[in-house]
Image 1 (cartoon, rainbow, N blue to C red):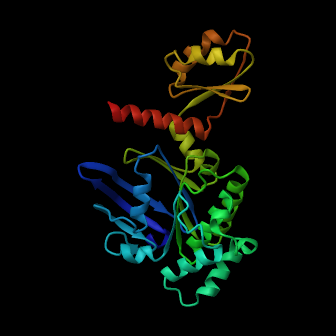
Image 2 (image 1 turned 120 degrees about the vertical axis):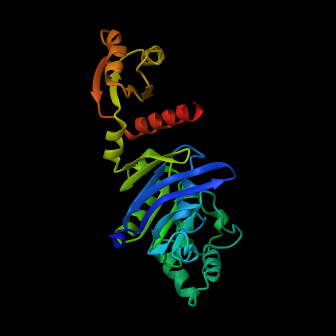
Image 3 (image 1 turned 180 degrees about the vertical axis):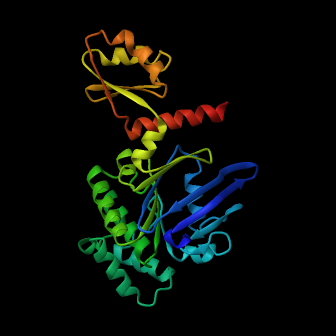
Length: 308
């Protein structure tokens, strides 16, 4: 049933001049779900989620977002959406409280002071509420931006690479907040290039050059890619990687710390490529492919198709 989904759309399409940026995409997102979007820069993922949220009008397609028609009622969808951009877009010479009050005023909220205070407490900003926004660290700026997104109590949050340039601890704290909010029923659409963040999403979609290539849980996305990966441990891994990259069947040969990961989509061709090297001084072990290997595989595959 459509009521089971916060987003339920078919055939979403967007063109700029003669270029199709989003090409006939279907998607369903459940309430309280954190849905991640992966893909190279310029792939159309941000354009797609802006259409879903009423921030950009689709040229074709149909369906609903938060119960509203995505084409005819986009203005109503916008009132239920919080949008957090990659770039910090608040007044750095105003305090945290003053910035949040400004946002509440923009939304025409009646009891602004109460809304601002609730948002400050919800995101743990009480100690910084009088501090100038420009003096906050990157992590606290992101937290303030999230507070601003929540101030009008939206049902859907659009986060466009929300933790770019933020240190690992701040990123972890930020994601803990997202997961707490999702557990309370708030729905998230998130674009990210961080694989550890993608793994925190309930489901993922990979978009490239306007096309939706894969979607599902992390496990489903990895399985669908069909990659085979070997982990190699031992001496001379840099030289080994250089040799392996020249062999047919080897798509990736990447060093992770003290190990080399060798991957390919054609398992038989990969086995044939690595066979002469397995008698060397290194130890070889077949391991499950990771999301990063899959991401690179999809990116290189889609780049090759676009250039052909």
